[in-house]
Length: 118
Image (tube, rainbow, N blue to C red; front, top):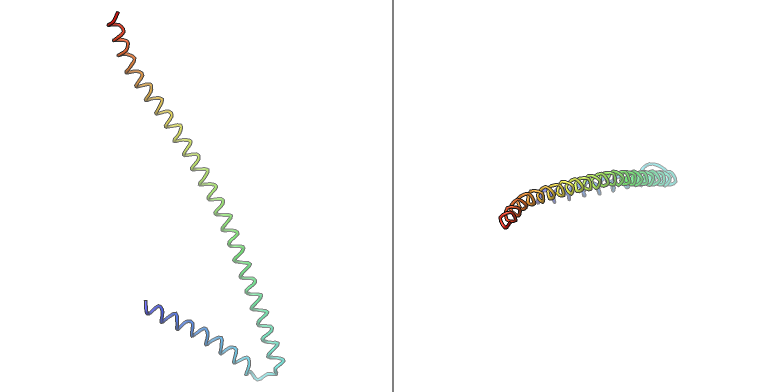
């Protein structure tokens, strides 16, 4: 676990160092201040546009995932209802068959008792 923390610290340090180096190189570049400001402005616009595109892509992917989830949920709901209905029909059929078997065993005994009373 300590190795993960060390690597994470190294990675953060590496990224911060890289960004700092890029900023310093822009500020100390052998060009006029106007050119440097224009370059910084252009890079900021480019970065903003990339971030905007990334947000839009993420939004589209999220919408697509929601649509797929809804389709799957609807399908699972339909299948669950279908299986529940099939189980209900089978249960009713089994219940009716059991009733018929019970009635079949009770009726002959009742008839035998009735005939013996006569």
